[in-house]
Length: 431
Image 1 (cartoon, helix red, strand yellow):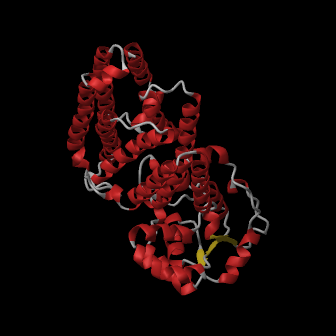
Image 2 (cartoon, rainbow, N blue to C red; image 1 turned 90 degrees about the vertical axis):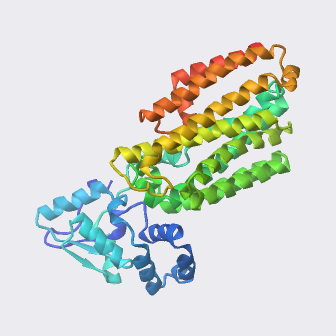
Image 3 (tube, helix red, strand yellow; image 1 turned 30 degrees about the vertical axis):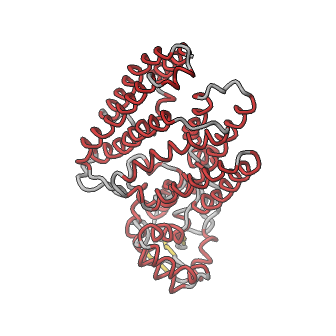
């Protein structure tokens, strides 16, 4: 890190620092563009031609309009501590900003480590000579794994549900098609996560846990995040078009469009946000059926709708729980809910979860079920197991112990794994 940088000039000379030294993996201009894309997209479109040509007046207009929150930017703390040490030894520290002077001034006031500031481009061009460069000593592999949300790929195992429900999991061709579908959705999901994190970067920095996400924390550069998105989308679509049915590619495109719309606007709409999340879960099941050309079951879709609505509400409940724990009583930042909505969300979520159990119970008595299972009455034992799991995850959320997606939580939770094994055993006995 910059904390090990060596000063290459005598101490009586001032130490000249650029804004980008403070944010080694981020760019103030890109930060401002992201904020404007969220708050004032029409204004951003008007400024875009001048920004692309690096027109200074346009930069200054964007600087003023974006009003970046400099208190949450991912500063290089080791480097800033080095500046404080140099200043305590009597050395002058000068900040230079070739562009975005208003943001630079506010950064200087916030950090309170500079003796002066210059907006002269010549000073900025000479600033690099003041320091010996050192690459940040961070684990890029771990940072990228978190940025791509590789652990969230577990949710894409939902694409295997139609294969299992149709009792065709022993067919090698269908199994390979389903696994390929999971890979395609995983790549597309990572692209969607990057887009979401880029658009929400300002809000995430105010969140108690999301501020540690690699893009918000500056562990992965914004430009690298932008560059990865088209690569992931192209890889996902190329595999789908080449190896899977055409309608599956439409599902991938629908997933990307819905995710982007959710990130831009739907996530800020009360109730619409959780319905959208439930739809994204259900879309995985629809895509899984299309990938292997099996018919979609009415019961499976009905069950998915209620169960995923409950899980989406758990996710929103967990976020609001953390917000209320901080003492915040107004509307949650970037959401359509207030902290006092917790109890209503819990009521809606548990009701939706129990409706899923009701659908499962009705499924037992359907004549189609008798054609799929030799002992369909055994499926009744699945109902109390599912009731137990839904009640438990809601109780954990109520206690503040649900800090991630409930499906991902279930994969690492021993009780959930035990109940899942028992559920699988019930359906195995009923087959």
